Picture 1 (spheres, one colour):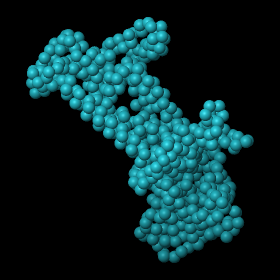
Picture 2 (cartoon, chains in turn cyan, green; picture 1 turned 90 degrees about the horizontal axis):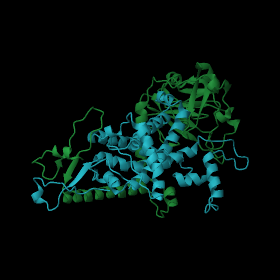
Picture 3 (cartoon, chains in turn orange, purple; picture 1 turned 90 degrees about the vertical axis):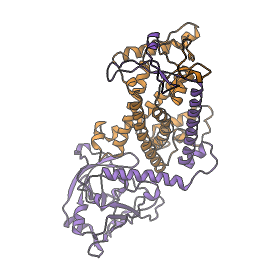
Picture 4 (cartoon, one colour; picture 1 turned 135 degrees about the horizontal axis):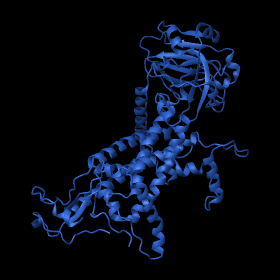
Length: 276
Length: 300
């Protein structure tokens, strides 16, 4: 996967100090981008855990009170269903709280959740500024901009990902589409839209946090109640992004993961066949 | 990397380890630049990698410690952390975040910016969100509003008839937003808090009002006075009412008969029901929900 020492690497003026030939590397990520990338992990986790605890206080998806339990919350229904049908959960002590006990700080801790949500939200905004600063200083923002050919190229990548496991099973060659850009169109779409999602999360967050002083912002999202729905579903965008993101990083290999820590990659030539 | 690009590289005598191999002229400002390949000595690369991995590893450990530091004990116990991680530092940190957020809210507040108003067709139901038991209506017959901390140095007691005859009634259809996230639009009527402040001016050094309901009950029905701090800047907001009517009818016990605070620029928890006293003070007074871990300014 990595071509560490190009054969035609000529000795340079400093080579008298080195016993080994040099390694050809490309700088991929500015250090501010790397730091803000990893900081997103604990911050988003904190935001989601506290966010679902806040959701518990007044769920946006409710139905008429259940005649038996008095329950109105759809998330509680899902918990009840999980406890009834998922093996190992039959003896769970409080089925309506299952979702909140597994996906949030817990039910009934609104004050704590709000304090944690504000802490993480301010850190998230600061981190976003650091990320953008890193993109600008490293010039990497240009690699994230969508371009005209992206739709077709994204479809080609999608076709590649869909066919890859089948080709592996059939032991057939399945060539990675060639791009001579830093990211392929699907990556670019994902990284670009998750940044936009971060920005819209912050905007919807402010619009429901300050619906009177910033009422114009809430109106932009269709009013206070609609902005809450936006804010809730934007959380799922992160799940939708993170799951394939992590799978693909591991599938792509050590060089890609390492580059987000050290900043450089030994994949100096961009258009290479990944699957052989 | 093709040979043509390779040949274009320039040696830099000042940089013994790093040299530029491929530099392409960018096409446009928004056009993607090719990644610049550089040749590094493996020794330097190893040293830098080791350094970066150590620093990022330390960062990951710090994040884990930070999570243990700020997460509530209940959550940590559920995740299998047996030790009690509560510390004064945790409270300090989380309260600090609240104070910063309060300062932001105060900076966003404008005494002239009005909150959105709605039409009668947009009125929604409004739930009785009394935290404890709803008081028995028997308190209404002997109800009085006590004002203290006034410029006159006197303490004044007003009944509902005094209030309704002395002051002009204002109406507004506004949204009440609860800290829990739900909200309700209702048609409120009552006197402006500002008019009360003009008729009975507070002492000159007063910056705060302590608004109290002594008829408030806890969940088991025992007396649990509800007290709340309100900055006078917000009290003077043109849409801050001492409401007597909702949706064209006198307030019911559920909604704080006979007089409640309606301050739409604050969270619902500042909208005290069945107010019995207002005291003007110089220093920020205690606040029922701030003492229970919520913010104290609550501007929205």
